[in-house]
Amino acid sequence: MTNPLSELPVPLLQAPMAGGPSTAALAVAVARAGGLGMLAAGYKTVEAMAQEIREVAVKTDRFGVNLFVPEQDPSDPGELEAYARALAPVAAELGVAAPQPGEFSDDHYAAKLDHLVTHPVPLVSFTFGLPSPDDVARLRSAGTVVVLNATDEAEVRAALVLDPDAIVVQGSEAGGHRATHGQAKTPLEISTADLVSAVRETTALPLIAAGGVADRETAEDLMERGADAVQVGTLFLTTEEAGTKPAHREALLSGRFGETVVTRVFSGRAARALRNAFTDRLEVEQISGYPQVHHMTAPLRAASAQDPAGLNLWAGTGFAACRETTATDVVEQFRGL
Image 1 (cartoon, one colour):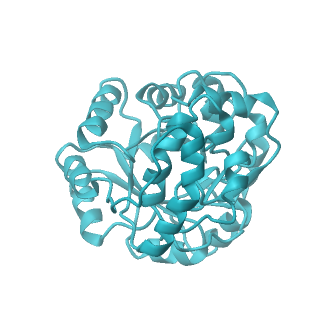
Image 2 (cartoon, one colour):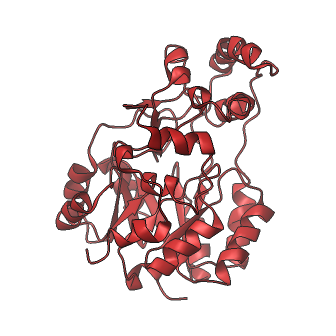
Image 3 (cartoon, one colour):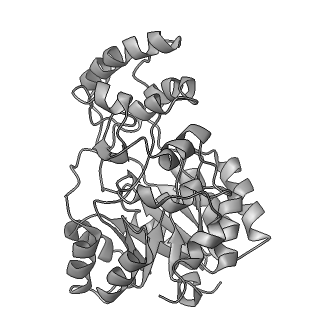
């Protein structure tokens, strides 16, 4: 397999957005427009991941798959129990069972990696931590490009030890979960621009700038600072190919939500979302508790599927640029960078 990053007509990666927004149709549309489409394996079974890969692979070879690295920072049982009690009144109001602290889940990481080694794809990226050297070696032997994520200079240094093919450097403007190496870590407030500039001084490795890339001007600045490509997520949430929930889509387009917050209330991991009633109500009680909190709040979010006040409305700081559009139109904004 050829390196899909070296032959991109448009130096843009579609961010892998787990939980619904990233679809096979979105990945294919981005690839056909000249970018790199990404599938999000997070929260899926191995077979569901494999099925999406099959759907995409028959239409393009310009795509990748993102894996969640199993959490290394253990959640505190006492804090999980306390948060379950804090969620109980919300559950009662929604008419669902009171949440209980769940069991730890590694998101089928080993089985997914095994599948990707025996059924290679062009590119695999990792979020929430770093794979082992053996994991990287196995993928490389299969001919797969390996991309790692980092949110600060220390994480970049740790990633460089594994000699990846590229690093996604994610600044604080990014929507959804921060890619911090460990849930307990408080993400640094460093902009994507500053992070790219700092990292470019330390390595010649290809860098993919992520976070707040909502227009061409921002992308041009990041490329001038040393990025080889940009990663875009929020703008794709309101494209017709995305699997974004209707209430989430409407919230991004309505103009009724004026700010984003970095919060742990939905998943126990730091993530940027539109500020709503749920983020305000649980702000004081929020804990570091991924992935258990994610599973604890899942029934509440499902019961609020039509109500943006109770949903995890992931969004980057540039969400005001979202429009009802197609993936092709989003990619075209960045052609010629």
